[in-house]
Image (cartoon, rainbow, N blue to C red; front, top):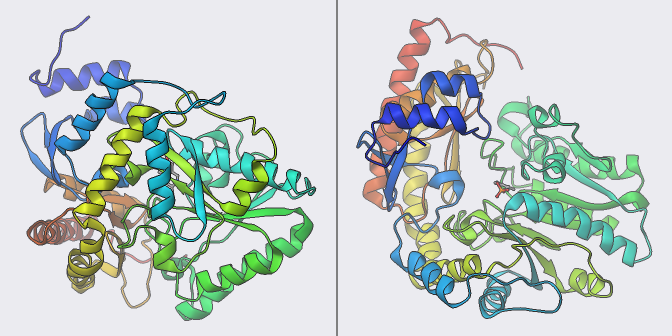
Length: 466
Ligand SMILES: *Cc1c(COP(=O)(O)O)cnc(C)c1O
């Protein structure tokens, strides 16, 4: 075996990585050619790579490091729990203290009567659980034919076969025979790209009413649930028009179908409230949680059930569970993370102080010639790149070309900002300071300048059609 350490030359690390490690959502051949960026340390909002560069993490890892990197209390909570009880399961009528404490805490924080948690180790697994929960719920209610779940194109609910089917990523459906039967998709409330001549308000209503039309098309007696992210994350941070969620609420109530809010990104402070459902005015029956629950320090996710859903499921044996459902170390770390978020008033600070500060700065990016719109809620935001601001035009070049160039310029300026096609997105740690927000915005501006110059030089500032 080749001996390597964090002090090994980057090229050696990259070569060994490319030889033996297959990366998610990556073209292996490209990676082998370019070499992965090797991250060695992190503190607060800052990453360090194997070249010693300090990089501002505008994405909080993958939307998850809400409390920031380097929190010793979280490391200590894990170490304490590993010494006391590193593992025990929650099958067969057993439990342990960390899972009891965490469940009670989540019930306290979650709105309404969402009081019962079923655990997984990720958001994907939790959404797989939700598919079985919904169908079991309706079967227990004597309506087993209500097995259809409606979801949205360009929504993201995970990468397993079940959760990837719930999601509306066509590139994912194209590999591996997705979606599974019984999942139907409606269009997303993405006004900037798809709203045409409608006002955002009209468009929000139109897109919400697609749910009603879909329910009528399938047959109301067949539909069990609707799942959506309060604000789409991986789809490009798409904040729906204000008319959208109230109309969705009306429709799910009218037909008596379950509403699942996928809070994997929005949950635990990202939008300035504990849950995105509170920011957007949603009353879900089930919530999916993961990511910020542990600030990414341990893999943990889950489904929070309303009292009504929990009581119906409780009548039967739910033949479902994961070896690591309610893993004690993950629970202990999540509990400590929630303590930090609450006691340090991190969520309140996002809502009242740093969120509004970031919003003002972020929205000023629309003054840049390459930026068509900038939208942000709390600490999740996106900008649309465009060759023609007035027309909200897409680029003539293949979608994602301009976004990729801009992302590479961000990387080169030591700022992590992702692109989804030609939208640039941010989701920084919730602990980001005003000074760090200033750095983020100035680096973003510089990257946009450089990308704009490159797009002009390559003749790519040409508008296409939708
Ligand atoms: C990331 C994500 C998931 C999947 O979570 P994993 O932990 O990656 O399995 C599900 N839903 C949403 C909204 C997400 O952003």
